[in-house]
Length: 109
Image 1 (cartoon, rainbow, N blue to C red):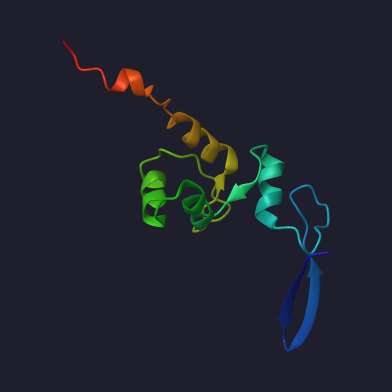
Image 2: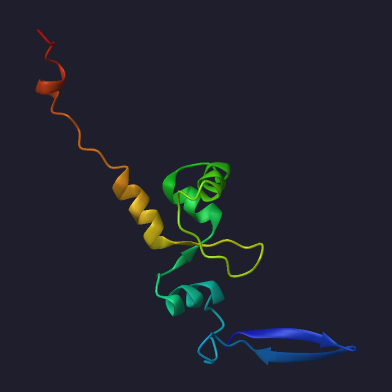
């Protein structure tokens, strides 16, 4: 079970963390992954994770977010998460088939 520790007037108090459905979460369960499942968009990734998957700089991913070229989820005012589905769509849209070598080398007449 995932537990949040709160210090109140010098006393230590542990409160179990719950998801949006009111279910107690496991220790190893990331709250943002659960959020992605709750809203139906699959796992949510951080900006560094997306940058690594796309082999881009983090600043490029941030620019894509600013230009609204990639879907985002904002669980709080400052944090940003990107659905894994959005990353797959970017990869699929950017895929182009290679031209066969015999066609590529022909000179226009």
